[in-house]
Length: 141
Image 1: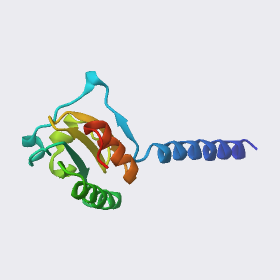
Image 2 (image 1 turned 90 degrees about the vertical axis):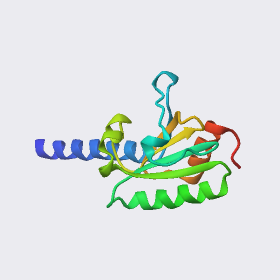
Image 3 (image 1 turned 135 degrees about the horizontal axis):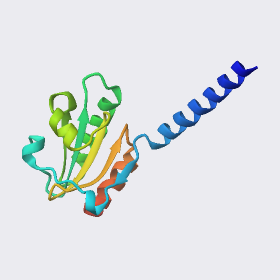
């Protein structure tokens, strides 16, 4: 009987953790004013966008990274002054540690000055990316 209760408890806890992770996946969270990092063009190895920059941290065997790359590139092509930069997390470990990147894909949205305004871990939806850009630079649509 005790084994069955332990099994049921383990299944319930696992389901709760999976639901929480699924809910959080791809959602952008605003960065508190006191904690905002500034990312320079030298750090990411590319010029910043005129209005905003979307920086994606990826890894070689990350399938959500490929879908995120396509999504961000499509949005950057359609929104004036917005660029996207992809960074291989494995090749830039110092920057990964500095910016507290915990998983791939992670997307940082920078304003024109390179200030991190929001971030998301996991595959974001198009509407989430557009809302994050709106928050960083104003209307993007």
